Length: 284
Image (cartoon, rainbow, N blue to C red; front, side, top):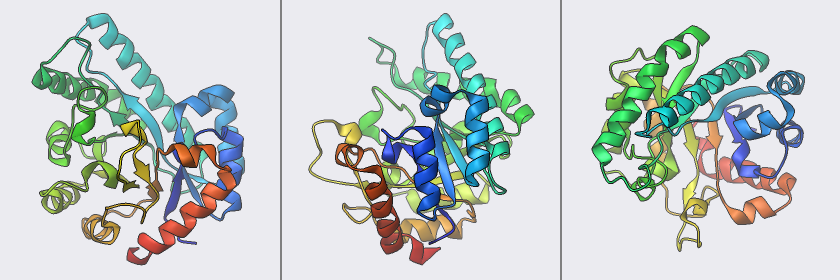
């Protein structure tokens, strides 16, 4: 078992926190990427105890962000949610095994309803990260901006490329603000090698996530990820780029896929381990 493999909880979405922790540990995986909703179901204090008892590292918490609203009241509510998320990952990372990462993954959010001003939405996302920087610094948390594939720019993520994400955080300290390199979202970008190199030089790679791009798309484009090796992503090349850029953290397998969600989560975890060994582990 490669010690850098982390199971992102979204890959077994319908498993509750206790099940996700136990299945991860039983499979010999030493790290888990958590999601806020399952943590909220048991409460933060109980979740922290469960993480501590599991012996697992925490590689990240998904997700914060969704702060592109133009309405001041909506913006204020979004920032308050993100401040709570900062406190959550600080608590969970402290509870995790040594090597846990206090990384809060940020998805910028899409265009407000009826809005077509993409530039302004991106500017509001940048402003929001800046507004949260002091809170993150005080909690020892890294705000990790995740660029999303351009097909999601309207409804989920107005930050579409690694270059945009790096530009967004460039004025903040690297220990406070970084980026997520998610193969599903960035594999297509012809400037990816240069941008990963830049991210490494700036000390900005806060998280590395892997999942494949499969075709044909299912009915819901959000669920178009597959296990590594099932699609079109060159994991060996991208992983080498990330490692050459100096990234030494966990590698999260994060997959949104209905077939996986409907399957026995224990079997899904076993399939994740096998796919990771065949496509990513050899580069680590």
